[in-house]
Image (cartoon, rainbow, N blue to C red; front, side):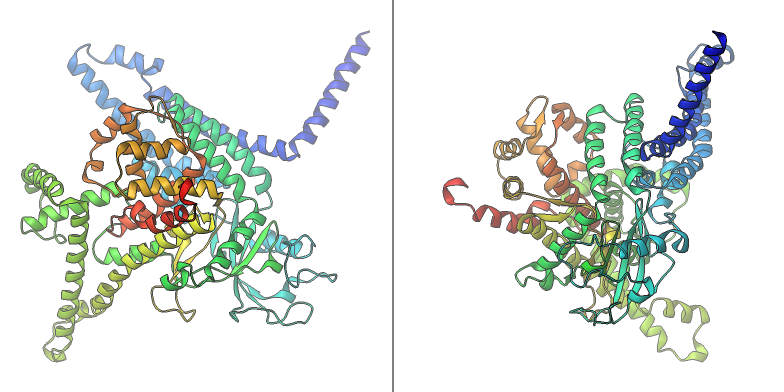
Length: 627
């Protein structure tokens, strides 16, 4: 009997082990292992914060009880010590979190990118470390991973429907199609990476490549082989992470649920390369329409090579030029303006600069001593507040741009004058300064383009949303290029990366249009709130004032009052959003990204006013009796 029991236990163990081995090699099993790795690395960090910094920690309670006086002085000393401990924990664990996310790659890279710019109360040292993920994203090796994917995809018959000259009966070799492929990726993201390449002028079957632009420079976007199972697993794990944030009171439950719902839908759609290719094709075809704003606004969209695109790779025309974020950063760094901050910080600095102008001070130059700064802190703050309220954000930003332009023109004139001085009597330091600033006039002229860029981007995306009903909701500055060559005049813009496109039905476009128009036309609170309600928004108190103010905040012009934390506290005390319309969330994301880019260029835009003509066109297409 004992022998039978032992055999039974052994058999169960063997069967269980075999089943477990099978499971860990499935996509679900790999996803579970990945989640386990994330939590096993993160748990010690959470535990360390709890043990040394949480008021509920037995260690912290004992320290406070035995080593500090039970009075106000003791309480102050304990709080000071705890603050120092927390700062040391931040210094120690910020690099650890960066390594965890970078090692896991996938959507953890995207999580790090989001956290690096979040408005949540994340310590600055964490944001600083995680900001490296905005550009320094690790990719996969071309020879061992990417090349095999490209060859496998080009050797299958499941290409996008409607392609010309697709993969035929004879299986091509990668060298039959591409003249060369750069092994170093030109871009890497959470679920794939891109490589520049040059097509051969003949297809692998010997026929001539068809290309209306006669352009054979392309970009190949390749999805990582593990993305199909990693993305769902990562989304589930990030959902668990958000629950911990809710438990720790870092974010409220409603905000977490709305964010997670949008995040999950957004990235599940990103692994669908067939949909991305279809969206790119639709937007490219739309850009060829002479009535669309692309041509007059000098905006280009890459052509899709459907015969070289599948559900794991997309081949598209290469658009040369730096990202607009790099171009604007280069321009504004020359002016002493930082672009790596939030909208609030940019406008606050602008207000501070205007107060300096009003008091006859230099905007840039040598900083004053600490004692002088402390003495002037109160009156500067007061003058900044008074000036800001008196002249408004728009005037402030206009003054900053004007002063910057005048400063550059003055530098250019001075440099030109210095260069006319005979060499023997010209100090070397002057000569070096003149060389450094001889392009200042061109830089001043370049500043004029920024307003044109902002108007062009709003116009094109307004057309996508309201006319086409298919728009790119991920139009961040890294996905916008300042085009060089391509027989375009200087300052043309190129749009890339259509992995997060959203499609709207005619009814959805009409609902969004009516809300946009009510904000742009400065209609009453009641009318704006009703248009918002018709879209399906649900709030706890159904406050008309809250809905109207919320709408103007989303799609109106940035106002002085929006700078004040008390204004936002008052707004949130009025009501609480329980449900935000899904069709509006991606439209708002688009407007937020474009307005953020505009503010980084010292331009304050009303989204409603920018999109008013496109929204009105949607309404006008309706019969008068149903408008």
